Amino acid sequence: MTPLLLPADGPTRLLLVACRYFAAERWECSAKCEIPVEPERFELIVILEGAGSFAWPESAARYHRGRMLAGARLTGAHRRFGRKRRRL
Image (cartoon, rainbow, N blue to C red; front, top):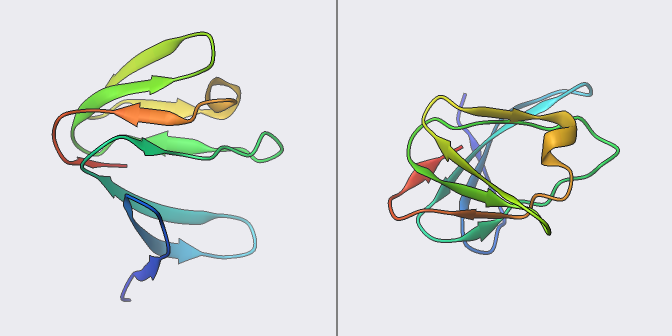
């Protein structure tokens, strides 16, 4: 199955699989990018490679390969920073 390229400003987004219950995307970012999070949905982000940080209005958290952020922890998270290409 060939991934579907999704429109995005900045990162490369690929839709890997989707059904009525969930969707899996791969994001490739080489600079700061925004990740919109919808509070009414359960979101799960797994870092496949790279390092950087997520920023919330009042705090920030570092991430690295193998780290996972899920659910309420993501609410309000919008920015991801890093120096190298990253895959989510």
